[in-house]
View 1 (tube, rainbow, N blue to C red):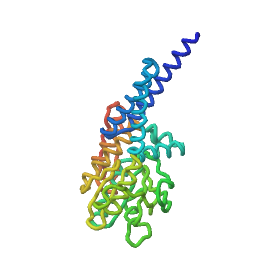
View 2 (view 1 turned 90 degrees about the vertical axis):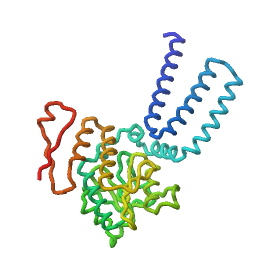
View 3 (view 1 turned 180 degrees about the horizontal axis):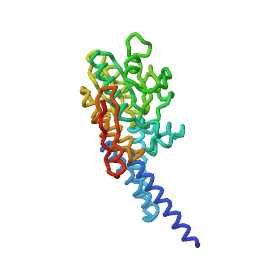
View 4 (view 1 turned 180 degrees about the vertical axis):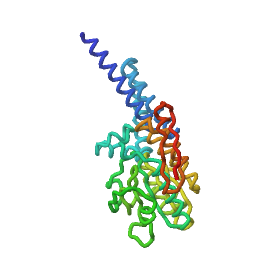
Length: 304
């Protein structure tokens, strides 16, 4: 292979790696305005590279470099939380979170959804404050919190969740961390958000704070004063919501999370969670004949 062949191969690899990196960034961005900013920034960087390599325009190249530098500083200020999170993930080696492929331990089932909705409904009726963080793939660790709380490592259940938020227990003021079908810890102190300080209480600010820093986790909030249900996701709070609305949101969010890890369980999770009742003593019996016929959806029957 001659010298020019090597140069062209390097150029091809350079372009392929840049395109792959750009696609990875686009896949991680959910907000439309942020996506527009990212597109404009990458367009400027691409223009600067093209002019420097092929056009040989020194003055234009300097001007574009100055614009790129100014945009880089602006984006560093605007996206300081996201950049901090990126460096944390790189430093701790959590590459699966960056690539959008959460491990199996983060895959929740319809039983988890039912128990979370049932718990939130009962706590709301009793006006008992609660904060439940559901990790959908952010791989939350003790160093991500102000206080890591008490390790639980127990199978999720409605009775256990209600007892953890009992007012006469030392863990009721903190948050409960849920991964998949397990309660990981309780009494966790979350970082607070700076937005809406005058509008929300401490629980709601904590829910906003944790979902601002980690985009693959959601937080269920039960107000102690009014019993109002809320759900925080990606730094946004939806409130007030009913138990049926909470179940609908959880089904959509957890179903999307599971579809990233495996495409075979997506339709069955949504159908099962929507059709399952809140009666914790019920059992779900799957129809094996439908699976064997290679249909795209699996229907479940409720057995009393």
